[in-house]
Length: 257
Image (tube, rainbow, N blue to C red; front, side, top):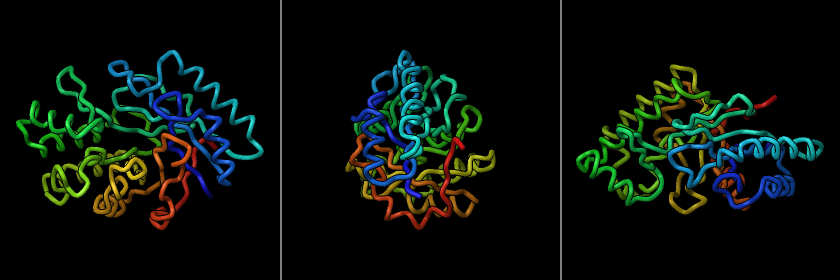
């Protein structure tokens, strides 16, 4: 089976319309395409779906599902941020993700730029990156308490700008221990499916996917499973580098049946 369920469109911060994505998926001979635009977050509308477009998004994807039903399976999903208050009961599946640290009443982006990461560490954590990392993984561990999650999105997003360990060591126990605790918390509460996300590779930030190899091994040891996701923001990067990680996916997972 050939499918990609983590795909963004012009309804949030993607470059292509849903129909353009569907046609590209058909051209590639894919079996299933799933849309997962960013859920509305009231405190930051710079990247997410606007609240007034939610109904249009749902209607558009459902119409495409019917229009192309004989050529490809289309699924209606959402990438739900931990701090989004929007309901998710109308979607075929939910990718649960953390994009922010909430510090007091302030929301700080985790993945906007290395400069913001450095400033966040300096302003709120005394310049200690590992304290910020611990806060991030503690936030990820909250997902089961707050969200429906069919699978966990880019588990170690905090590492997006850490190619060649430019900001911190991913072998340091101060990095690994909070990450392992978050894995344990998620799996203990039934969130066993994690994406192998190649989105940062496609955008040139990283040469490896999320989660890192060491974290994937730990997730697998704890009974976790994986699904391949491109986190694509344009049609050209659908299924990006999937062939490199296909062997790690023990079973194909689909939703909305």
